[in-house]
Image 1 (cartoon, rainbow, N blue to C red):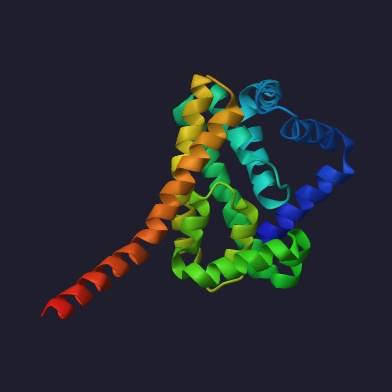
Image 2 (image 1 turned 30 degrees about the horizontal axis):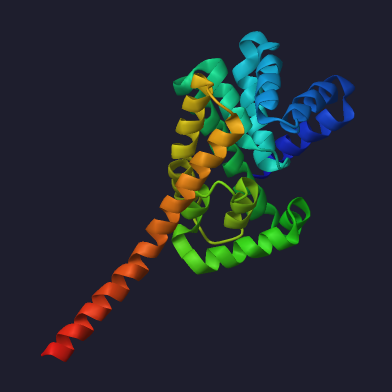
Length: 235
């Protein structure tokens, strides 16, 4: 774990200190901050195409980067992968590289502890995620991955600060992010309509589904409790 962290920090330092590496990285990050989602995806596609056969590798590195140190909208890169590589290969690339980024965040938190994580993410965001973990326990990671507005990197770092085993964390992360990855990749391949509109439409549908799943046990207990009360009263 420490060797991996040293390798990552060395690579990050090399990018920061080497103009030949820093300039392409700055160009890539600029596309994420484009005003329009459609323009951002088009810019990412042109950027990835410029690397030829190395495009999948660069895409994977960008996905890991946004997971670890850059709060960037990953769905834009997932759309771009779907457009450029097709929905199946694009989804596989986005899913596997996001898993690598999540694992790296988890390892960093577990190896370096809360003080280091607090420097990487905002303290209020980490505190809110801690409360979410206390509320939902072992299902926290799965629920957070299903919610589009939940910060991917903050959840990964926060999970590393708990006693959650890495295997269970990776399973919940892989399962939770799979639906969105598949759909964003498919929408990217279709490339129809406004990407921002498609993203929010799907996100709203997914959030409503997750809320219904979370509230179902409460509703069921209430209905069963009322039914039992009526039976006792009738008897």
